[in-house]
Amino acid sequence: MSTQKPIRRVTVPQIAARKGGDPIVSLTSYHAHTAAIVDKYADFILVGDSLGMVMHGMESTVGVPLDLMIMHGKAVVRGTQRALIVVDMPFGTYEESPAVAFRNAARIMKETGCGAVKLEGGKRMAETIHFLTERGIPVMAHTGLTPQSSHVMGGFKTQGRDEDSWPMHEEDAKAVSEAGAFAIVLEGMVEPLAAKITKQIAIPTIGIGASADCDGQILVLEDMLGLNPKPPKFVKVYGDLGNQIENAVKSYADEVKDRSFPSAAQTYT
Ligand SMILES: Nc1nc(=O)c2c([nH]1)NC[C@@H]1CN(c3ccc(C(=O)N[C@@H](CCC(=O)O)C(=O)O)cc3)CN21
Ligand SMILES: CC(C)C(=O)C(=O)O
Ligand SMILES: [Mg+2]
Image (cartoon, rainbow, N blue to C red):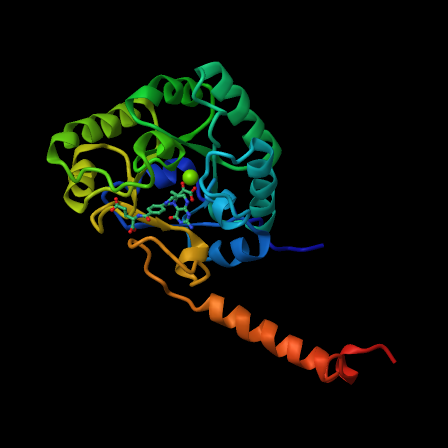
């Protein structure tokens, strides 16, 4: 029998209470073994729908199925014990009505064991965010550059370049905060707008391509590890995994060809 006490995960209220406090650390993860590493350092881990592009080679996040989010969500929950796990609701699973959103969010939570869901949209999603949170589903909001709307926006476009659009972005953030979201991702917006919104609203802002003044930051893990050959400008590359993987694969290929792999250590006698 293990005497080790189970480690309790970071809770939604603990994240919400970090407004204006110690910066919230978060990364995406789609995979059990990498999530186990991220779990030691992140307050929450996002199973993002960017997995469609990163893991499955899709051109956008629009084609990501709910079942795929659930499969990767399960993998990350199994691989972790400490961080709060947040799973993205994919395009088409929440926009139609609060009732449809509830049905799909409840499925995500029951089947993965995650602690919260995230969905894209400001004012227009406020009613749905209220509906979910009133019924026991914590919601992280996501405004600014919302990749699921890339077909309407004409691509992945930085938001707030034109100061006339600032009031709209400020109202979006205020609306989701008042609707009950416990935190909000601000993606791809000019720095002063993200800083302004962070000061105005009561919930923590999590920046990606936004501002160092946000209450926390998030990046796509594979981007910051150096696996994405063409990362967006807002990514800081902390690792060199692309080259490390290539060198390892090349060594393996060489050793297979010259029969130095497997050697005695890797064979059953
Ligand atoms: N690997 C990956 N990383 C991400 O951060 C990410 C995804 N995938 N998929 C979903 C969205 C899409 N994201 C993106 C993708 C590209 C740009 C991009 O190319 N931006 C331009 C700026 C364009 C402008 O200024 O309007 C850039 O040069 O960085 C931005 C966000 C962020 N998310
Ligand atoms: C970039 C983050 C915020 C995201 O939504 C994702 O990875 O899908
Ligand atoms: Mg996403």
